[in-house]
Image (tube, rainbow, N blue to C red):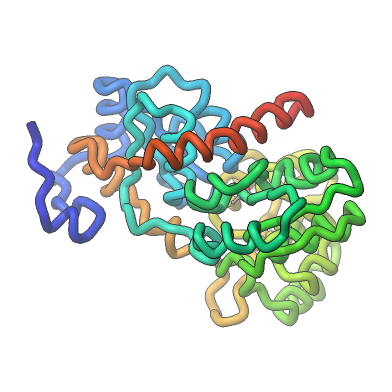
Length: 332
Ligand code: CIZ
């Protein structure tokens, strides 16, 4: 029986030094085999993690994979709400996350008690929550959406049905604009997508006049207006692969460039920088907390493990399953 040190518990991750001479990727794959573990990685994690994972995808695809796996352990290379979703869908499996500090600014911007009070103050509304929320926020939701299915799920409600959409005000107003709805929006935002700069994007468009601009709908309206394509990471990736164009300005978390470059090695992908930096990439500092070394230690000690209160899980599974069912019906 392994003892989890108090110092690790205090930090939320294991900081044990890696044995010298070890090839981390090989050792990780070996442990996955021995422990019947599966590694799921989000497109926003660093490339080395995407390369070691069994499956790489967006939140919708990761949830679909988790729901279908027969592994005993799911190790989530992503942020906390993604691991919570896996635990809710697979209560009998052990769900590990390499760093408990890997939270999400959007999920943080929507505390469950405040969201529940907002919902209560607007009777008659159906509640749509973006997947980037805590399990407790999902528990007061009618249906969960991701950026891959938000439009279709919103449109599945009758036009006269009043709707609340939380927590991303940018995604919500984008969906309002393309569906003609007037959803009531929670005032939350993603710290990564909010900090793209119109000026820097305009400069890059001048520098690369034939490039297509790929924008995530969590970006602010003035950035979305400059897009050739607006979509989820999966949609932007698909467009980049199949487009006749060979150069793209990518306006989302720069981790996606790894898969874009892998799938379309002859094309050029340029990450659009944030407004407050001279460096080229706009990275999520929470996603970057997940490293190969932490994955190795997490598999080795089978900790940190994500738990969800059973009562919360019981309420949160309904809107998640509803999302998965609608997505299946729509072929997403
Ligand atoms: O849904 C996701 O995975 C997120 C956070 C972004 C995207 O569009 O894939």
